[in-house]
Length: 182
Image (tube, rainbow, N blue to C red; front, side, top):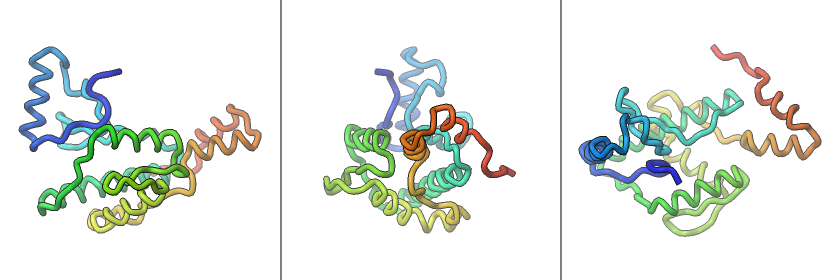
């Protein structure tokens, strides 16, 4: 098990995070901020939030969609905090259970609704998330990129292999340019 990975704690603002960071630095646990490998973390050299959990997307439209969701989500959460809207603070072990389910089964799997405890299709959870971030996405010009693919890249690769494509063919399909960037 590696330290400082996974889901970070909720802090009481920047001061709480800075206090934790200072503790790690003062105790010799870290020498720089990049030695905190959370799935989401503040970047101390730039005024940004790093969303580090996503793999690279071989499809440009899916990469754009993921970036749009991330951007809109950051804006929507900031707005909720500014407006005093309560945000959930679920136990990390439950968030990580859903992460494991997403990793294992992708879009065709199921996730746990951490409010109700009900198990529902992953796609339903994503649709609800997109609905929640839609107004923020519209404000920042990202709404046109919000989308959920019919299958994610891993699911498509597994299907191609099941159809008889070799691993070399599947890999070549992933790295072959499909859409011009720029």
